[in-house]
Each structure stands twice: as structure tokens, then as C-alpha cells.
Length: 127
Image 1 (spheres, rainbow, N blue to C red):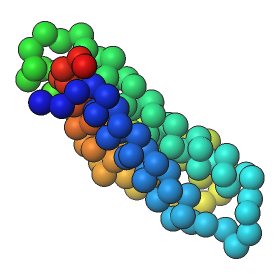
Image 2: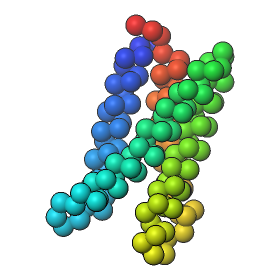
Image 3: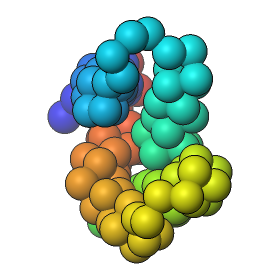
């Protein structure tokens, strides 16, 4: 069993990798503060918020199985909702012809990873 410190360290590594991936996925030619802000908002909506909410919900259950199920489910759903919110804030107003479902389903990639990490946090031993 891992400690909470190790579980939070694993999430920090994931968050750095996730942020770098999101920043470099559609990198503009030159530096753009608007692009940097957009990526930060995306990472908060789809990386930080799902992990925090999943951890908070997972802590409310007594059994380990329910903790894992709750953290996984909450992380996946809130990650998909985060992508949908990002679509509503940035993609739709720009007039892009991308359907919300195509963007929201991207949460099915990061969400399970965050659910696993949140599950590690809520089931880890205190040390």
C-alpha cells in the first residue's frame, strides 16, 4: 500500500505531463498569452476539478470498493463535463464546427487516470 504523499506525488506528475501535453497539442507559432490562459483553464476544468471532487466524494464511503467506484465514476463524469464546459467557453464562441460530444468524450481518456489517482489518495495509508 502506498502513502498519501506518494499518491499526491503521482497526481502531481500526471498533472505536469497532462499540462505539457495539452499545451503542446495545438501550439501556436509564437507565444500567446491567450493560448496559455486557455490551456490553464482546460487543465483546471479537466485535471484539477475532477480529481478534487472525486477525492472528496470518495472519502465519504466506508468500504474500499465503494471508494474506488465513487472516485472512478466521479472523475470520469466531471472530466467529461469539464471538456463540455471548455467547449462552451472557447470552442463554440469561436464558430468552430466541432460537436460538443466529440470534445466531451476526450474525458474518457484522462478521467479514468484521475479516478485511479483519486482512488489511491482516498485509500492510501496516512504517513
